[in-house]
Image (cartoon, rainbow, N blue to C red):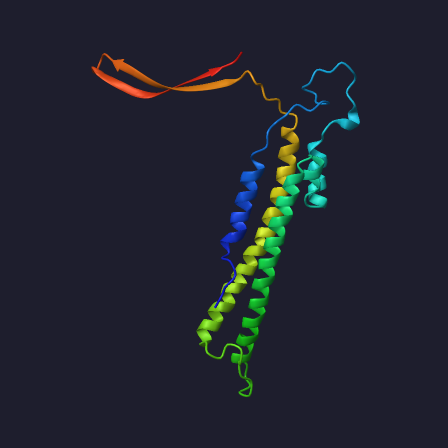
Length: 196
């Protein structure tokens, strides 16, 4: 018998969304308060993290569109469609097993479970509980993805104003030192952070 994906799928989708969204790169916005401009700053053109958060809360993906991260909308909706599909599969299976449980444990002796007649009562109950747990996990997954896309829109809007200095460099080199007190050599890594 073929079962739907395990309940860990929503957690995996959420983890992929976090990893993909954490690859955000800060940039200097032309109207940012961190940027020196020759002309006056336009108040309407300042990128607002509050707007991105509200847009995402009203309609999932709208905050990502506001942040001009269009590819994240595709990832969000592809994950949502996959979760919706598996939610439906688990819900349909849950209903079928619930009907079998109702027929098996009703008080009438004339009703017979024809769909799962080869299964024992405990197996039917076990399958019903399995699909109920999966359905509940997908509901929690939907809520988690909804919350994460709001957080992603807010963080991404904040990072838009973040300036990356190209002159900042981290250098890691192997390091070997002689320790006169013990008469031994010490091997390790040396790190240096350089500002230009």
